[in-house]
Length: 199
Image (cartoon, rainbow, N blue to C red; front, side, top):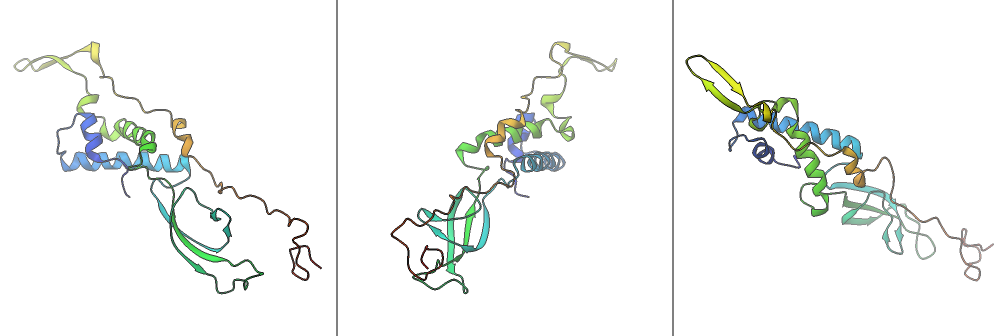
């Protein structure tokens, strides 16, 4: 799984010395993966651009009519072998394209990264993080006693924002809006061609 935020980002916020020890790094990566899985499930979409291939695609007045958005780039478009002949038929194409959000680097997706970092910081695997520990106010080596500063237990750590703050990017099985097919205006019918109003 590609991580949207780095283990170093989370380690630094939790007060771990950098570079983090391998066991600490693995626990942080697990915490980030768990947070990402929760976020992907909530949004109903991947957090990085994805390649899609669609067949039977029509070209609309404003471009290709595709099912996934936002479209980043069209990689290729080839005419379908069974596409109706021009000029009277509407040809269809097989279109390969990249679409989706880039939660790793796009400036507008910063709230997603904030949610991931904060959620990972509160993961139970990272309960031993220096920032999450109580501060020691005094210690006696010979008496082997430790006194904690009760005024600062546990230290304040940024709480994860409500997951509803990510709803701007949430889609659940929705498709890109496609305008309904408009009837052919009168006077533009072609006799003998189905679908144009001609007989």
